[in-house]
Image 1 (cartoon, rainbow over the protein chains, first blue to last red):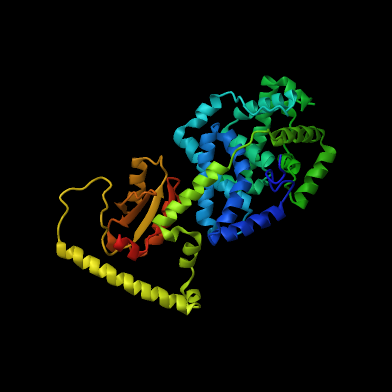
Image 2: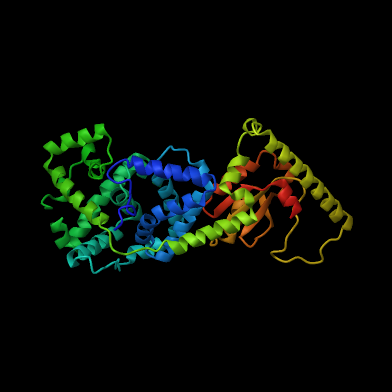
Length: 200
Length: 232
């Protein structure tokens, strides 16, 4: 894995990454396509993974990615540094994805699906792959809003306040969703994957 | 490690912050608060281990490679297409258009050039208007996507709608903002919108553009330059 690809402002504020992305936005607002290309490539992998998990179809994920980055191109000049760039972009992607889910009612369909992640690779150990699949199946059984809070926090390292901003809800709602998500996930894993739950 | 029962979960506020402590996204005060709590709460210490394991598993990257190039190429192509259709959609141009008048006056040559251009375009527009008025011929038929010349006065908006936007939703959106489609779609999917009553359009343009932009069915909305609308 290229560490540059997986650059989630991880481990805290990620100030250097945010500064770089702010500069990219400034250049994009002046019509700089190289800057747009850089930003697109920085965000594609994280958006692809997040949205594919959310929408279950890469084609849908890619449509949202392209929509999101297209909006970034259009509105880069409107970014006011009130939040991190990643929060702003994830907010756009989240709202687009939510619209797609609501329109297509894929959420209900997705909730009934057992996630069969086709992400196996020769470099993954069988145990790690199985654990990821079990966890993914457990996450898929959570209500969408709860699952997203977990994704934004654990996968993308967003703060509670940032998750609230992305999901356009009060901070306390995020905390409650997280609390319920953790409790429910634990119950799900204990029932459906007791081996995984014990190993955690 | 899951020794405690669900009923034994800690309900304190510090426990609710635990996930962000695990993610390293608490400020110093909350970090200290959670750390103090962890020192005395067995349940939360167990939870912390569990949450770190969940996070590590979620963070585990698979070897799947998502190819960004096709999507990037499509998006750049879409930008090219839109800019050909609507040059004002270029961020730099749109930004310049948004510069307040007192700042624009700092570049007098640009203002002069714009004035000359405006006069020239106005003249062309007038000629075309009179030519059209002189002809005074009503079209004998119309097609669904035929260009409909919008009224010469009034404000216009150029917009791109989501491909899966429903007709009913668009009708509602346009009606709510007293807009109607007067031209489009172009090859890039751009529609030109006008206020149903041009006399009531004064001061409503910005609000209508904002309302369109806020709507999930709208991909792009921008005030259309008068000259551009009149000349097309």
